[in-house]
Image (cartoon, rainbow, N blue to C red; front, side, top):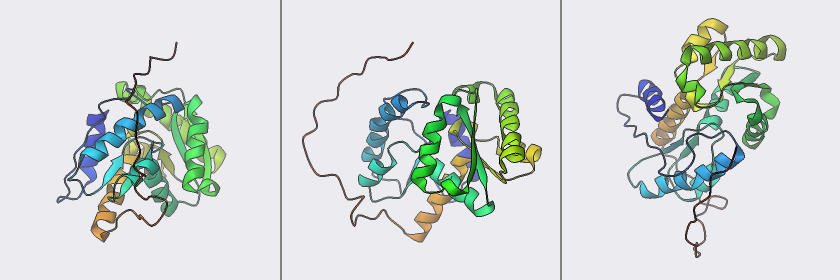
Length: 230
């Protein structure tokens, strides 16, 4: 999935932009629960703290795990792919829907949309039977399932654009646009263009109040979390 994310980012970037795609050294292999999300955040923050060279950071997981904490630990712009994709959809459609993975993530997705502040513009959240890893392992089946869910969003919910609610769906937007006839937003691509724009504008993360650096304090040694689940 990291390789596919990188391919989508490299394909859309400006010629002078250098993109370095990494994955955390710790955390779950995919994020599709609150448990997964919270376990992923320390590894994400570690990557940002150790990186002294990048001009901006992109969190390539729909839901933008740990984005507020990430903005506290750097002055560089931090762009979440969900936030970027919703901003883009908002500029090309009056109403849009998010088409995403497993049915259990509906609440997570809805809470993300509320946090970003665009609930009134969201026509619906359409979940599917796809796991995050399914989106990588069977691209044709993924395309068919996303097509069906998107058509329901357009025909039944009034969506005028579709946001793909998983980084693993990157690279399918053009085929879906051909099938659906409405704009389809690749969240990774949207985040790359947002990052380039903020860097070009010379903008940094405000440290006036909310995203000030964390207060220094003792942090106890990390502990190993046992595997949870069936």
